[in-house]
Length: 284
Ligand SMILES: Cc1ncc(COP(=O)(O)O)c(C=O)c1O
Image (cartoon, rainbow, N blue to C red):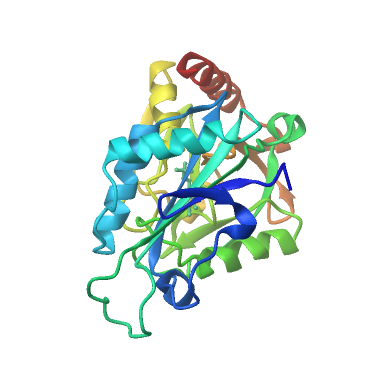
């Protein structure tokens, strides 16, 4: 098929139907791998350096050597982007510990599996930006290394499905009475005009969009506070937002089926959203 998607597997670009990995791959057997999702606007990756830095952090965290230099990653990612027929993309890349006889302990002398694909970047609909989105809440029952972007995502998968089951876009999680993050997004709140963000510890993914949002808000003159957020504070916040590479920033206007924060995106959100769009345009 002429329009079949081109993906990357272990150094080769090939049609997706021809990309095959072993059933013994540790990514398949154990979820033993890490990944990244890089948004691409007009064929230009957004915050590439930060994504490569986090990839290295995740690889270090699972004790897997980085198979490529940053220059090599950039070159292969750019080539993958060029091979797609659309300009705005979401590049997905993953590195697993490779195929080996099943045994929990790390195999010796096995090459990692490197896979990349790029799909059209589907940003939130205009209506979601203007009206905000619905979330549900749950206790965070994931492991204690949520700072690593691993392909073992069952906890996040179950949390996200909880949201879908209730016609919501995300599940916002709390651990020991404190806000952590959502199943595939970070969560920020606004209290008295100040953006309050949970600290980037082991309980949340250090989001690239979280950092971008805080930097952009800071430049726009919005005060910031990075500290633990209690359940009561989150539920009583003036505004609550989601941030992620594919959602950018989105206001939460329904929580557990009830209107939240007046049921409309707040003034701080609108200001930061506009500044975010400008930062994107400037980065092009
Ligand atoms: C659990 C989780 N938290 C936060 C994020 C947001 O990270 P980023 O802004 O780097 O996309 C994601 C992204 O998919 C995620 O899966």
